[in-house]
Figure 1 (cartoon, protein in one colour):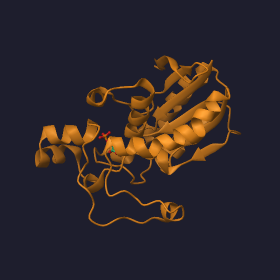
Figure 2 (figure 1 turned 180 degrees about the vertical axis):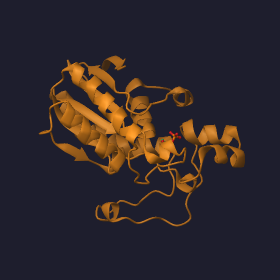
Figure 3 (figure 1 turned 120 degrees about the vertical axis):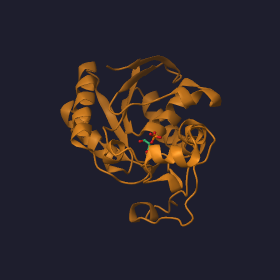
Figure 4 (figure 1 turned 180 degrees about the horizontal axis):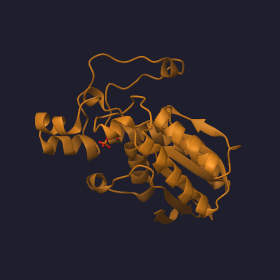
Length: 223
Ligand SMILES: O=C(O)[C@@H](CO)OP(=O)(O)O
């Protein structure tokens, strides 16, 4: 049976400092590197031969991917990088302390922005530009809901990853808390009003097994 393993990057500097990150390109902390090693150990124990690794344009996920593919002894694998797996863009919340944001906007509003499906965090007033996105003609979002994140992620799933799985090739995705929540919502068919209960901790891999129609037949959270 074909397998997909998905994992969130290890703790980033912004996770450590409890600030909103989104598309900000921050490094892993020493604890985050340790978590990446632990995730790699869990994945290595599965003894899966992968064909591809997919990650985002952000270094916390890329560094985690590099560590994992090295430690599972599959450094030769192609690591495909795509902006479509980037974390959800947190708009004007970016860089703000998460506890301070609760004081400013209220716990309920923050819960909707952080874990709701359609709630759109406050937008930036000026669009950022960065070479890595400009070169591809990709407009950096002013802010993204989970729904918007899912909408820009799914074409990559459908056009790239799904086909490889259908060909029987095991795949590994290293991405972010909310980009993975968007994918899990799709794979597990989670209703809009229940996705707020799904959390994806740093460096905790999840393994899916699919049948020939790409229907998920098992899901194991690796510990
Ligand atoms: O800041 C972010 O980009 C994300 C993930 O770290 O935040 P949240 O804690 O709301 O998932």
